[in-house]
Length: 273
Ligand code: ADP
Ligand code: MG
Image (cartoon, rainbow, N blue to C red; front, side):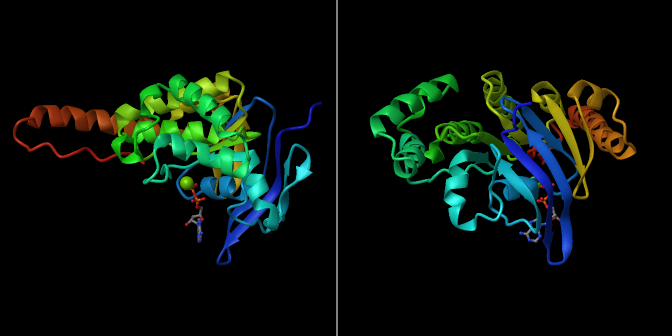
């Protein structure tokens, strides 16, 4: 059996005496896409933040290609080169053009030649539909475009594994698919990923394996088809049902809005987070 790229073994994490991760284990193998879903506050972000060393763990171990990386506080920068992460809020440097944002990590941290990285960056920008945006400042881009740049930036570091934490949660609905399509493209290229998302149809499409996290524990794990069609645990069932309820409610709201159109000045609909 080949060794997993990422192995998380029984990790624990507390904040102010409250245990937020209560013994979480997961393996992500080469080219595999693992999707983590679960209710708000169950520990999904904490899990990803512990994996890439943004939070220190209180127990357990984390291995990258067989090498223990937990507790290597002084080598955090080395770990973060190998573990890419994209968050909900694109953190591009606002005063730097897209290309300069992209060059920063590979050239400064990895000491790769700027010309070579620039060429690769242009190729990647083209692939995500942003070939004309290399010289643009981040503020001139839409949220969806910024997240695509953030994905390119992470990929330019050639990480062993890419962690994505609800990267479409802050986007207007029409921008969600342009970002998720890029992620599906990465999955097709064989990029190893651990993804936290609330987009259930995307999760089903992209996942090789789904983990359901609840109250700091993995309550269920399975292949996407089986998990989404017939979850084994009651908690997962309830969780998935909350999405059908939410979408049913949205549909009802939409109908109500259609009836009252013209009476109201159109406020922007609340975004589901
Ligand atoms: P999720 O991403 O699943 O919504 P989080 O991992 O962000 O959940 O949070 C899990 C729990 O840990 C929450 O109760 C949250 O309030 C708490 N938490 C997260 N980060 C911190 C922190 N830095 N300090 C204190 N509590 C935190
Ligand atoms: Mg979160």
